[in-house]
Image (cartoon, rainbow, N blue to C red; front, top):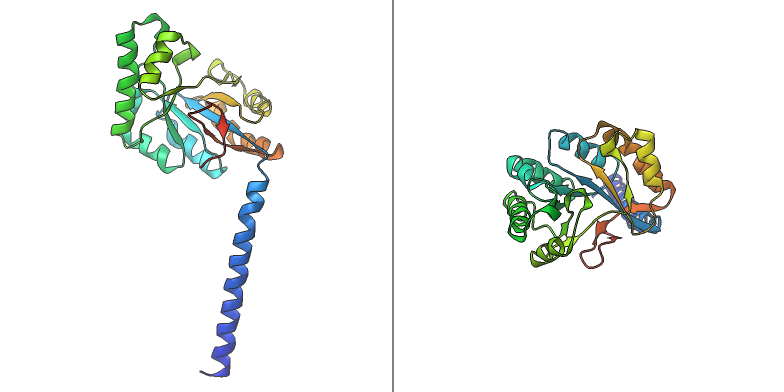
Length: 224
C-alpha cells in the first residue's frame, strides 16, 4: 500500500468515526427535548384528503392516531396501508358513524366488529383505540367495545375544525394541550391541513412530542 492510499484510508476511518459519534449523541438530545407527549387524532378517514394529510404530517415529523370509519377503510384499503406506512396508528371509529347510543347491542356490535375487520383486512393491524362518533357513549357501548379488546378514547381538547374553525383557532387549540392530553381533529377540513406546520412548531416550542395512546390508560404516552 502506498503512503497516499494509507492516508486516504485513515481519513475515511476518521470521518466514519465522527459520523457515528454525532449520530449516537443526536438521538438522546431529541428524546431529552420531549418533556411530555400529546395525542394528535384525526377522525373520519380515510378519504380523498388523506394522502395530503399524511404528506403534511410526515414532512413536519408528526405522528397521529387515525380514527377510521370502517366503510371508508373497506372502500380505500390502500389508504389504510398508507397510514401505517407513514408511521400513524390506526383506530376504530365505527362503520357508518351513527349515534351509537340510539342503537341496540347487536347493532353496536356490528358497527364495531365490521370496522375491526375492515381495518385488519386492509393490513392496518388490529386497532386497540376506539372512538364513538360524536363522543357519545353509554354502558352498552363501553361493554361492547371492551369485548372487542378496545379502549374507548374521547378527547381533552376539541379543535372545532369540524365546525369551521380557522387555521389560527386550530393552532390555538393545540397550544392548550398538556402532557398526556388528546386533541380531536378531522381528516378532511382544509384548515386542519394548513395548520399542520404550525402545529409542529407549537408543540416543539412547548417541549411536547406526538405520542401514541396507551390502551391501558387512554392517555398519550411516548411511542414504544
